[in-house]
Image (cartoon, rainbow, N blue to C red; front, side):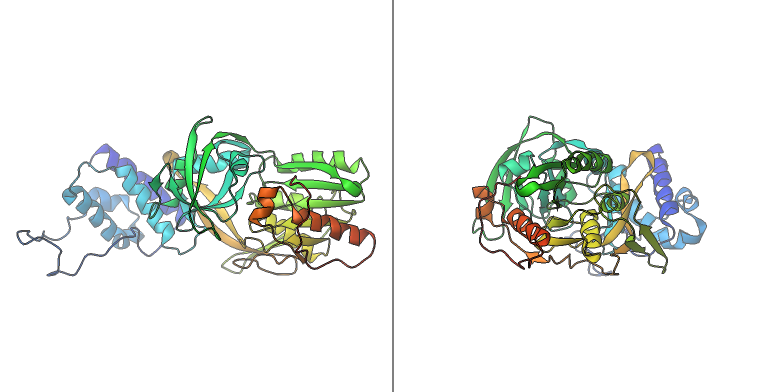
Length: 435
């Protein structure tokens, strides 16, 4: 057995030890017909049975799953013995096996991240990377924009939540793995990527030529608006979010604002613990969320005392790009009636994933370990959060630089301050510039 195969076996066994014994297929693909129906040409000869599993392969597999893994090793040997283009890439075979295993779970949030994807994902949460600056969904048929990062090339170019990337640099992405498509969009600062976008409501695809930049993600920013209202925008729930939010709140609260707008629109989420820390800045005590596991176990995450803005009247902005940790935050604030939600129904991601790095820098598996519930035991998985005040943001609003959702948030906050009724919707756009 060659050295590469021994290394691959070692990697694969480490995956088994990480994941525990499991059942089901590894490779997702087409099944061959039964014997006597093999798709050979008229002169082809059906091969003999599968090559035997070697003693090295057998001994490298844990004893309790040797029978289970025998078909895998047989398939491995068939590829090496019979596939037309040799030599095959053993590392790619191994990565494909892991990818197929994750897909077999039927959970779009449990995936294999190759080394490049894992590095990029960590870079985004750490606060910087090079690309166009957009959070994306890699679980759909096409790479889909969840939300452009404020101030990014993606936002400046006009990309919107829900945009589907159907071509990259003129190459059709139909049937292309969305993680592969994601890597094609990333690239060195200063280079250009051409995206063809399918957008709901548009009869023809849209073309965008975007110059990549180094994306430095300032996760929490703020400013004062008219009527002595503080505005805080949280863009992600990463490593620096809590410290940046505290700094922003310290500056704004020193100006004695009458009310506060927390903007979580187009916030694709991040770390669960960061969500707990963000909620704790606005709620004095109580439960932030419940984390429920498949075996019935439950974790309770409580507010951390010492928040900087626990008494000021506030509202929260959400939209279809608000997902995961941002929904944890908005859901808790809504449950405690600490803040009214303004905007449209959020994304609807109510599960928790662990990112487990694999041996030899072979990426990571992202696996769903639990589902989370709001303090009132609500789940938002597949449903999202329903706003208290429903306000849409149209394509015309984007083009004209209007922000009717922010206008509605200001109006609702002023109603709270004046003890008057809060409107349940605001269909007429006005002319507040987008922050």
